[in-house]
Image (cartoon, rainbow, N blue to C red; front, side):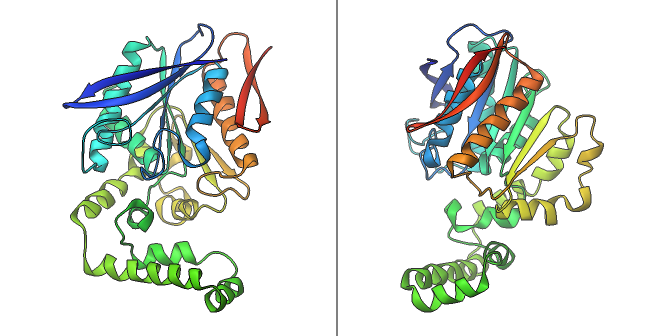
Length: 317
């Protein structure tokens, strides 16, 4: 089985705690993947349904090094910090340099979910050509500024357009029935409406800066000149945002790039790929795409569902 190592590296006076899951044998080439979480409210290094731990296990089993780390002042990284989007970008840049140097990597990949994917895009643009990632995998990427205002990001504010996009899907009759019969659903609806009102009456300057940074994600994706994989769930509101507002009719000219991004839209997929089938497909898509860029010698991956999660099992070609 793959092993894991705990690390603490420092950046701008902050101690950043990380876990590296490593292959059982010495791979050639040595490729590292930094796994980046989205919402910091849900176990940064592990994520919903332990998806980041499971992904790290699968990557290590397939012959890759996987780093998961806590940004400054969160989880196991000590201190108190009013963490901002640009702090996360800076911390990722430091993690990339640390990971490349400490593990003598031949290649580096950023794998990000939601806001983590947006952070990856910005960090990829900030790093110089020697340190920037050799490839990026962006899942459910946050790329439309209105989506950055959704309450789950902790600002308790949203815009009317974001509210309508995220409540406009689904069966209207079921929503009406729940509104009439389900007190919890009514409370949630009230909180959503209140968030819209707050969003227009109390504009948070940190939120405004975040929205400005997120609005640049699409343009930065179009400028990235190395391989990229985009993964969305078919039912993810961010996929709707991406196709209707960020890149309608290929406005970003992604299909004309020297390395056109590979796009996977997962049937019935949600924002965090919560089912076993979705998680398995997410991991398999990740590893198979990485193998098209760097295939560790004599290894491929097959996938088995286990009671404690998904494992990638190496097999000899």
